[in-house]
Amino acid sequence: MKDNVVLITTISLIIIFSPFFAKILKLLFWWFSKVSLALMPHEDNKEQDIRLSR
Image (cartoon, rainbow, N blue to C red; front, side, top):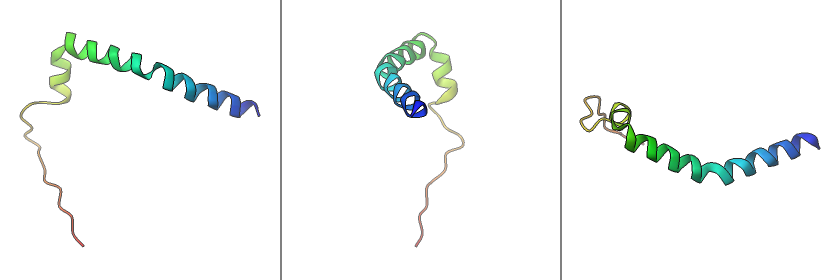
């Protein structure tokens, strides 16, 4: 029973605070634009096509 309460509390806190975390991350990526360029470069030299076969 105690594990369920902890799990529900954790999930509800994540749901409540996720918009705040998203805004903080957006602000950090805006402020430190070189970090976002390091994570997602404009020119990807390791680009690969996705191929599906039956």
